Length: 254
Image (cartoon, rainbow, N blue to C red; front, side, top):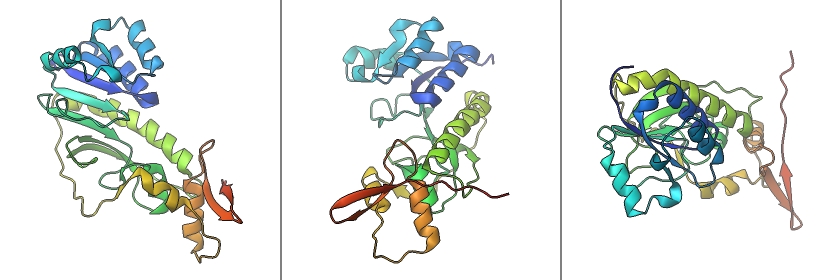
């Protein structure tokens, strides 16, 4: 607790709000500045209630402003934390902190790098979990320092996987932050040759069910449950120019 460390935080969503609340309550003096997503009013309210210095709160839309960049550079932070941050971080921020940029990724890296981890971990039956890793110029490819594995069940859908990852990500960070502050971790290089990487454009075609195609039952059920996340679109098929969507529910019988 007494060790001096300086961090900048990019928090977003539920994970970001819980992380920033934890830091403000337990490590207030560590935080040098916070960058909020432009519409992230919840996190702005949390910062305001904690009397965090308003001059050290920036919006994502301000990151190209010279004054913002100068303030952040002059803060000389040790780490930048990307806490569920939805945007790609580029220079000068990537090489700005003394130790590095830590990204929170909701998959068990090196599996499911990139987009839609909650779909692909079901469809491809890859190991699932959450990871804290150093960010670099690759997509979620930097050295891993902490991970938490999460078991999947047949009842899981894209929705339940998403919320499992949210909860586990917050728990992993809270359990790991004291070690991050003191650099009590081992950097594990990812073997990207055994991992998987997916882009946003892959989701829709992978979710299409072709009516006259033969599938193994396991594969078909996995596609349908992986896209079950209301109110988001489900897996889909077409007939006579009409599109139909599928959402399923699997119940374990005791």
